[in-house]
Length: 534
Image (cartoon, rainbow, N blue to C red; front, side, top):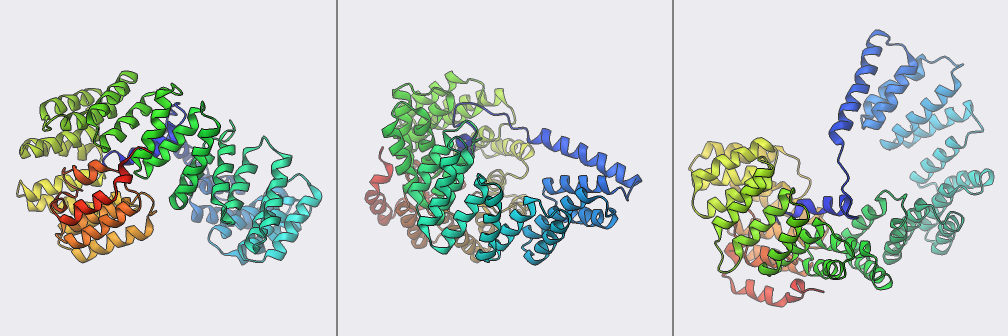
C-alpha cells in the first residue's frame, strides 16, 4: 500500500510516456504577483471600477468567491450607466457567483439585468437556460437553448444542454439524438464526445460512456480530460470501463496507450493481476518503453509474491531512468523479501542510493526507518523519521510511524501524543489520512471505528481499499472478528494485493495479527482469483 499514493499521478501525468513538469509553485508566484499589483493599485485608487472588476475576475479564477463577490458588488455600485459592456460582464459574473452558492433566484435577477443592457447577447440566454435547468424548470431551460440554436444552429453546447434535459426527463432516444447530432457536426471536436459520454452516464449507459471517452482520448486536443473521466467512471463502474478498454486492445492490439490506461486504472483499484496482464502486453510486444511501465510491472509482481521477476523489472526501470529515487525504493522492498527474506543490508544499501539522489526523499527515509525498526534499531530509526517529518511535516504516514515508535519502543509518550494529535489536525480526504489510527492511539476507539465506517461509505467500493484499512484498524484495536468481516468485504470487492494481505508486517497499517486465524486462510483461499494474472 505504501506506493499507492503515486498511482493516480502516474496514470494521469505519465500515461503516454511524456513527463509533464508540474508548475504549481510557479503559478502560485505569478498569481501572488498579479494580486499584489491589483491590491497596491486599489489601495491608492479604491474607486477604480475597472481595476476592481479585473481583480474580481482574478479572485474568481483563484477560487476566492467571496472576495470576487465583494469586488463585483463594488464594481456595479461605482460604474456609471454608460459603461454598458463592463456592467453586462459584471452582472454575468455575479450571476455565476450566485449560481455557485445555489442562490438561483439572485442569479436569475442578475441575468435579467444583463439582458436589459444587451438584449441580443446569447451569453445571458445560455446562463438563463442553465439556471432554469439547475432549478428543475426544464421547460424554460429548453426554450432558452432552442433560442440559441435558432440563431446559431451549430452550437453544440446548446445541443448538449438539450440532451441533458431529455436525459433527465427519461427520454433516452431524444437525449442521444441531440448529442449524436453534435458529434455528426463536429467529429474532430473532443468536447462533443465528452458531452455525449456524460449524457450516456446520465442514462445509465456506462459501457457506452467508456467507449465514448476512449474516442475523446484519441484526440490530440483532449488534454487528458477523457482519461480523468474514465478514472472517475471506474469508481463505481469499474467492470464497464475495463471491458471497454479490453475491447479497445482487442481491436487495436498494437496501440500501447489502451493497455497503459487499462493497467493504470487496474493499479489504482488494487487489481494487480489485471494490471500485470496489460503491462506484459506492452513490454512483451515492445509497444511502449519507459521506466514507469517497468516500475509498475515490478509493483504488480511484488504484490503477487513473485519477487525474483519483480526484481528483474525493477532493475529495468532503474536502467531506463537511474535518476528516479522511487525506482530504488521499490527495488529495496523487493530485495528485502527475496529468497529467505530479511535481506536488510542489501535493501538498505539500495535505499541509500535513493537518498544520494535526493537526501530528503520521504519514501526512502520511511522504508529505511521501517527496516531499522524491524531489526530493533529503534534509536537509529528515530532521526531518520525526524528528517522525513522535516521534509514533509504534514505527512500522516510519517507522523503515525514516529508516534508509534516513540510510544511503543522509546517510551516517549508526550512526543508520541503530539504526533497523533497533529494527524488529527490534518485534512481527512481519504483513508490515507490515517485519522482513525491516530484516534486509536489516543484511546478514542469508538471514534476510530466510526471513522472507518465513514470512509467505507465515502470511498468507492471497487478495489476494497477502504475495507483493507478498516480491517487493519480493527486488527490494531484487537477486534479480530470485526477485522475479518472487513477483510471479507475487502476481498469481495476485488482487493488484489497478496503481499499486503499475507506478508506485510511493517508498521503501521497491516493485517499481521489476523494471519493465525483459521478464517483468515479460508478467506484467502476463496479469493485466489483476485491474485491471478487475468
